[in-house]
Image (cartoon, rainbow over all chains, first blue to last red; front, side):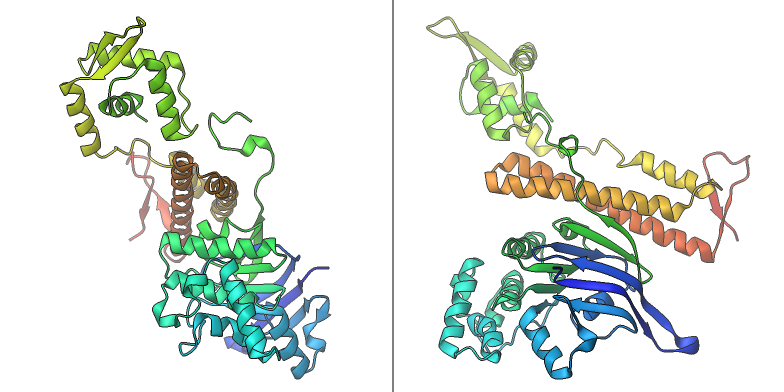
Length: 240
Length: 190
């Protein structure tokens, strides 16, 4: 079953002269373990799409299904719980609480879910280790590099086996190598079965996805998946 | 890619046989730039002709190559001189877009978007290869793939700019130049 299904989702802001169609009839299906990138110019509806997918906003038309359940049919309490257990968010900045260490930040969602603090911390440390961040587990966010902060944020977003990670320009201000390490980590999480939807204007980062969806004026215009077949291999002089 | 200079750099570390040079070259560059033995010996003959290497014969009667002082100077110059950009990237694409703007049968925005999707696909492919190269620790190949990635990205950004210019053109339309002004395809209406 798809983890995320957007069925002809639309989002209109305002009315009359001030009516703005932010998202128009967008359908998107994301399977477990799939990495989907959303690209488009500013104002094309990328962030609106992500907000609808994450239940932070409601569509004015169409449906959003998470793990087969229509988000519109959930009570506020159920919605909050479903979102917290199923979805992790990573934004461009301000992801971590500055007064908690990296490990405490990662443990926080587990504690909110009722996991005992000691177990939550041990789980968080294990996860940080698995993403190569063991050495910084006890540092406060202010003592981490930008790339490390974003990788901790990704660890926090997926802790507790969340099935869908929604990332909005998570590599925004990072240098090339740090940005790539963040995207590499998203890719790595997909291998564990977590689905990732990445909104970016950076083509180099979108290229790590299984599918790239192009948005324009609130509509999906194209999709790009890597070409198949050996004829596409650019490796010159490589014996096959 | 300069085989000539690469061989000089290898010889700068000490005299070698032709076949050893081929092996060392390939070890340094992964198998991104495979060299055939013939190419190595032709290049060495030219280097010798130009006084950049000298030859000797070893106990087994095999030819051994050594770098000369002039050869060392050539190596220094090579490292001191930036590589010239030889090719205007995607010239064909620039021309296609200019003509698409003139043509009644082409939708320029479509041409741009189709190209963007194609660029994205090749970028995806190179990115896959990059992930493999990182796993293999193949540095020379990785550097070349990085270059391909940035070239594709540059093209995509250029396409974004083309699109922005076209959007502006809708607000202030361009017209075709008079037939009598060759070299200028469009000019802004005053």
